[in-house]
Structures are given as C-alpha cells and as structure tokens.
Image (cartoon, rainbow, N blue to C red; front, side, top):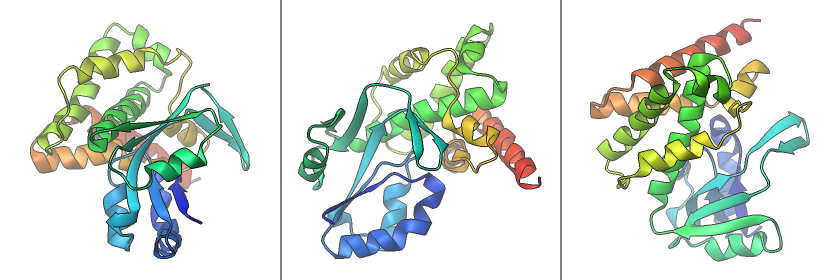
Length: 237
C-alpha cells in the first residue's frame, strides 16, 4: 500500500496505530481524517514519522446503519489537506473519478479548528437540549446558546496559538444553520444506540485545553458531563 487513510472513530486510533506504523515504515503515506485535533500528535507518539504523515479534514455526513452498511446524508463530499503535505498528490489520485472533492489550504490547523467548532457545537447543543437541531434553533435562547458554544471553541483555539481569522464565528454559525431541523450529530446517534461516543475527544478536549489556557468553557463542560454520564448508564446495562 502507498496510502493509508485513517477514518476510524477517535477512540480507536490506539488500536490501529501499530498497523499504521508498519505501513508507514513500508513507504506508505498516512493521512488522518479523524474528528478532533489530537490525531497527528498521537500518531507521532506511536512512531509514525511526520515525514509520511498528514492531517486532513473530511466533510462526509454519513452514519453506520449496521455492520457493513453506511448511509450517506449529503451528496457533496470533501477532503481538505494542507497544501504542503506530502500525500496530496496520492490522495488526488486515489479519489480521481469519484464524487469526493480534494481541496488544499495554506494552514490545515485553521481548518481542523473550524471543523472542531462545528462538530463540538452540534454535539454540545444537542446533548444539553436532548433534542435535534431544529428544536434547539426554535428555542428563544437557542441562537445565543449556539453563539456561545462556537465562541468557546474558537477562543480556546486562539489561546493555543491557532491563527483563526476574524469572521469565523459568523461562518460557523451559518454552517450550523444549514443543518436540517431533524439533524442529530453522530455523538447523539451513538449514544442512543448504546455505543461509545467521541465526546471525550470533542467537548472533553475543549474543556481540558480551556482549563490549561485559562479560557472558561462551561457549555462544553456541561455537554461532556451529560454525555459521559449517559454513556456510563448505557455501560451499566
């Protein structure tokens, strides 16, 4: 293999790390398309060389219906990579002739944090309200709640040196407004199916980074606690 795409759940990274180390040692490039912002550093700790590794962002709305069956929720699919990343040409070749657009940006960290703000906001809003996005939006305080959730993520990112441009808050808000009223994020789908969620690597990571950098994140704290408690209840039977 000359290209390995990492598309597992964030909590499964450690389980497949040895395989990625082997593949990278055999000459394959490794591209992480995981949610969250920690995959690159975690892979480096496991021994995957930076020289053959790249962080990426995938915009592919889909859900697992059952083992081997995935339902796609949006017609347009996109993968975003850093323009300077080594595997860009290999990724383009791999997806040539498909419906997946390959886009490059000058700084993938900004893109990672923009997506982090989207997935965290969706997860936290729906976790706190225990409702779909339409119900959250229709509440008198829904718009303000959404604004504050987005701001928490971007404030933490900026406090950690990510050059998130002005106007990103508005951009993310408009993105969230385009989700259909009946939309539930994957965190809630997994929770309702009794499966493990990615909340620790989403809202939990924002909470941890916020504490470390002195940025309050009360909404992410609350959303993470709510999901963690529900997961524990599921696990207890």
